Amino acid sequence: MTPRAVIVGPPGAGKTSVGTALAEHLGVPFLDTDAKIVADQGRSIGDIFTTDGEPTFRAIEEQAVADALVNHDGILALGGGAVLSAATRERLAEHRVVLLTVGLAEGFRRTGMSTARPLLAGVNPRATFKALLDERMPIYREVAAVEVATDDLDVQGVVKEVLAHLAG
Ligand SMILES: Nc1ncnc2c1ncn2[C@@H]1O[C@H](COP(=O)(O)OP(=O)(O)OP(=O)(O)O)[C@@H](O)[C@H]1O
Ligand SMILES: O=C(O)C1=C[C@@H](O)[C@@H](O)[C@H](O)C1
Ligand SMILES: [Mg+2]
Image: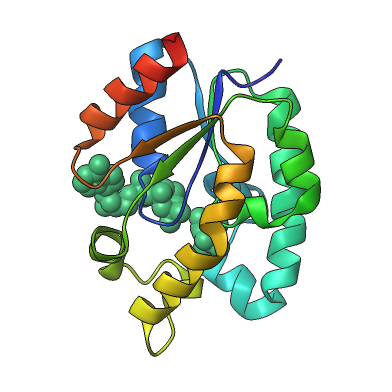
């Protein structure tokens, strides 16, 4: 088994929303590694960060991604920071990876209302978001064969773009 496509990108790019809609359109299962980790651990990602720290979360995430890459047959969405693992990047080289991008203003607008993202929960979440984009964009681009900018598209519009790329 192998995923039809693996979706990566920063928080708020729409990995979960687009992945769900894309899987529905294709009639295949959808798996989100964030949701899988929460279900397996029986606690929120915020709780894991607070109780055990980010490195423990990243280790759990690396294993969850490795499992999903061999066991999941549909659309797979990764957590926003999953690509920070060199082992995960190596594994992704064998897969069809789609990068969803979002700019600072729109990404911050989409994530700003939520307290569910521990990395963006600090005193200056906008600056944190900018630093995250600056650090990660080259890493996302390193693993992805396809890139779709989502700022000016609704979820169905992004799904359409992704489908066009996957068909081509
Ligand atoms: N193309 C879009 N246009 C408008 N709103 C969007 C779009 N994509 C996602 N959203 C909204 O932005 C918010 C974040 O989307 P989503 O949870 O899918 O992002 P994500 O990439 O999975 O983020 P995370 O890395 O935190 O899991 C949601 O409220 C969602 O409805
Ligand atoms: O960008 C990140 O590092 C994260 C994004 C989310 O998907 C979660 O995996 C977690 O909040 C960390
Ligand atoms: Mg998500």
